[in-house]
Image (tube, rainbow, N blue to C red):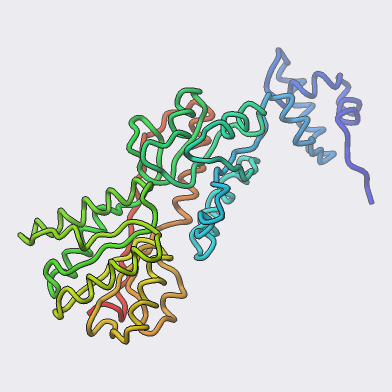
Length: 335
């Protein structure tokens, strides 16, 4: 097996010093065009592949970007469906074109000290935050440090690069459609009180009801993951009226809990209660009945997040936010 070609061998074959080869590869220093072409010709002939570490040292780059996750175990619900997998595929598909790698980073959204420590170790050139919390301390700290980053989900903090989908318009459309048969008897359930996107969901839900001149019943909205309180909420909603009802669940955990709750009480879907959820999953087609859901362009979100971050790292002009289009997949759980 042929040993890996070294920079010294390239320099010897081209008749120049190793420093000249380094400068040609990094595009720095005053090198004549003739010498530059000769070095590149030798690199191609010998199939020279520079060490990623050496290349990074030459160019003062790590060629890494970080994907920030929370270390809290309950936050790994993203692995229960294909969101994280598709999002990561999108990121990697872009990064490999630019010879970048992704590093998984961990940080508490309420305590930016771990994030600050990670950045100071100079392991990555930029960060992608997997979710946007209300008044996120990590976002505030990154802005203060002028460190390149992009957020998944529209933040409530101004002048931040983010990638999101048209969730507000989607929620408005879903609520309007369900109201055709249920009037205002539409429950909204989500697990995370701190996600800013849930506040936007509620806003669009209320806007849709008001648009149809229907009253908003705040007792039909529950945000939280407390088992007992969520059960009380659903009990109250189901027994409040015998008329047709609908339930919109924002996340996978809320969906599974709601379906189990209805089945235990022998409440038929969609005859008695219609069910809708965000974050489409192929498994939802296997449910009986199959579940109406919102298909998000998750892989495209990953691609756009990676491109936006790389543009920010390279000081290229970027838009603050990119909004991608959702698709509502109507199935058997709605009429």
